[in-house]
Image: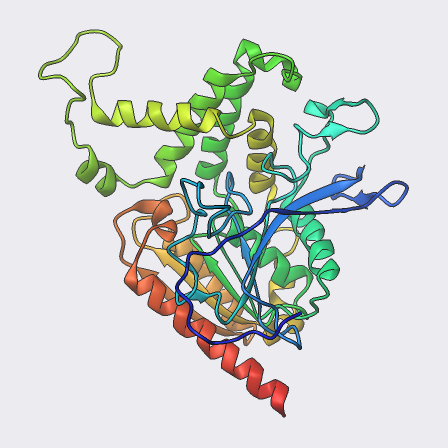
Amino acid sequence: MENASDKTSTAPLRVKKQYFTFAEPPNEMPLDSGARLGPITLAYETLGRLNADKSNAVVILHACSGDSHVAGYYGDDDPRPGWWENMVGPGKPVDTNRYFVICSNILGSCMGSTGPSSINPKTGRPYGFDFPMVTIRDMVRAQKHLIDHLGITKIMSMLGGSVGGMQVLRWCTDYPEMVISAIPLATTTRHSAQAIAFDEVARQAIMADPDWQGGNYYDGPGPRHGLAVARMIGHITYLSDESMRNKFGRRLQNRSSLSFDFAGDFQVESYLRYQGAKFVERFDANSLLYITKASDYFDLEHDDGSALLDERLTATKFLVISFSSDWLYPTYQSRALVSKLKKNGCDVSFCEIDAQWGHDAFLLPNKQLDSIISSFLNRIYHESRNNAAR
């Protein structure tokens, strides 16, 4: 591997999707459900350079419907950069001139990693609902295989928001000896009844679509309407009352008076329909079912509450970030996490950022967020280098 450099570069990043396959039969990976799965492929991307002692690795974990394309472009004709382009890149808070960034697509997804739409080697057809149930721990277990494959034994920092934040906490719980620092953003240690309820309504919208066909729809159109409605439901939870009021209010869409039909009078209706239609073109309905269920099962306070109090965790430095208008994972949930970590004697910093955009605020440009993450990573980077020099 080449040495990392702090030399400034502002050229657009070019990235390439890579694939790692493991757990070939008869060595399938065990899952929390008791099932075994293999072979497993993870799609991943890397940015920056891994330094000689492999001490500058930063792992980014994506949210529910995200993917491995965290930043940069696939080529000159790529119309859009990665989903966290404002955060990751040369000279940005997660500075790829300094850090070696890794982002993989989660197990169960449809964006390059093994999931329900993947081919079941036993049948030669998509798994569909024969795909085993997976958990956040299973996703992290698969990521551990990738990190081992890359020859990295210490992760300088892990960061992720929402479901990505759950994975960060799962990593810290299961592999605390590997994680030097962690930044969970806009996340929780377990889903509230309200969060589970929204997920269940979304799942029911998919399964009520006659084209879902019990999950075995890959020869047909699939549950496009149900998936669009599920996305509309989810998208509402990502916003806030204030952001919707400012962005849409009660403004009409391309009309000056009410239509007195169900075509969609309001801008917010048009926006949600657009989001639903766009989502159908890029995501698999079964993957959404599996990932939302994994999120609902995640509960560090029940089955792994003691792990957050494990003395091994005191070696990990934490920066916990919440957003004032996030009602999906409200600040009180982040404060509860901080309280547990402090009782354990962890080095933990906490910041609630005043932002009107709701849960999605962690994805949007924010100077305060940039400054906090940049400063924290800079501190960890220099501490790691100083420790290595001793």
